[in-house]
Amino acid sequence: MVICASSAAVHVRAQDARAADSSAKECPDLAGTYEVRPTPWDKFSPLGRRPRVKTTLFATLQRLGDGFTVIWHTRREEFLATARAQAELDPRKYGAWLDMMLRDPKLPLPLGHTDVTWVNRMSDLGPVFRGVDEPLPFKKCAGGWFLVSGPGRRYGPPDFEGGIDGTRDLEVWLGRDKAASLSLKVEEHRVFEVIKPNAIYLPPLSMRLRSSARLEKWPVTSAQDLAPIRAEELPEGDRPSKRVPKCHITTDHETVFFHRLKAKLPPKVEVQGMTSSIYRGRMRPDGTCEPTAFSVTIHAPDAASVARVAQYLRSDPFIRQIDSQESQTLSDGRLRVTFRTMAAP
Image (cartoon, rainbow, N blue to C red; front, side, top):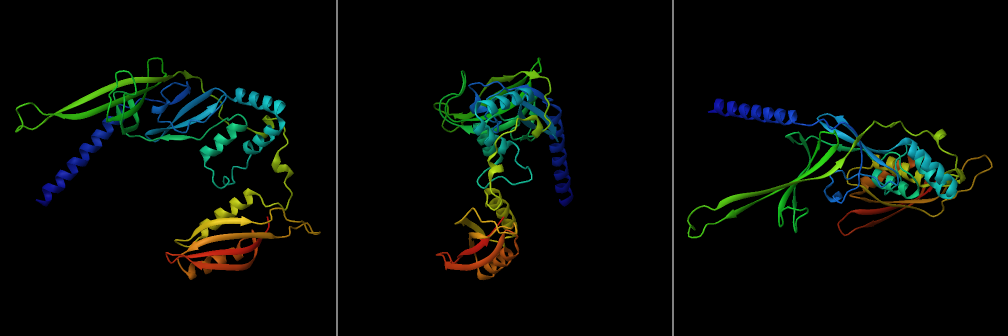
């Protein structure tokens, strides 16, 4: 019996491997560059990181294992021309945009920002050259189509002419047509049971409704230059960061400190907030910065964890000294502790 069970398990795994290999052979080669065309079918788009841009948008698909990576970008020449026009028409807005565009990539994003929100914020000030890359992992392929989303449940009226109303399962697929353009196809289905009259003792008959529609097409185009934009390609601008006094505690200082602190926190310790009463410190005659008041509040499970946080704060280069430590016990037994410190960049 053991031998039979083991043999059956191996047989099942072999069948799964053959099925996956067969599915992969049906996959289309989606690699290429396509001009993104806005359509009324964006609600189906599985590509959720598409940036907001005022210029022509392209999607370059590159191989990533058995799947693909989508690189959102604009045409380099069009981007640079828009940046030059922005510098002439609105120098103040251009300076703020230039700060974001030339931000040190080694720095973490300001607290509260993701890659997507940062790109969208930059698009409010000026052009965007490259958005956030989007992975399209392999799920399965069928008939030359690559599944990128679903099956997902939808409700209500039909989404397209000839579609199914009510509850149905929906899948989104990508493929290429004869002109090598990128095509988006939506497939949906619903299974329901029908009971025949005068046949209450017979099992119900299952019926499967299916509909399909090709909704979107992005024409293929030539590959674009995706090399990072260099500072010397852009007009100079009045960048706000260049006007910040040396001893000013900036959001970058706070963000870098927060990431260092978070990496050193003991288990079950959370940072609840950081506030500074004075952001602009004074410079001493020797050129060093005079520390300013800065507080850090944490929630911790016990006194030992609080002691470990205090020990780390004393060693961090941003914190110059701990003036006081205020503690209170919360209703769940955890400790809320505020460290009153002095900090300097």
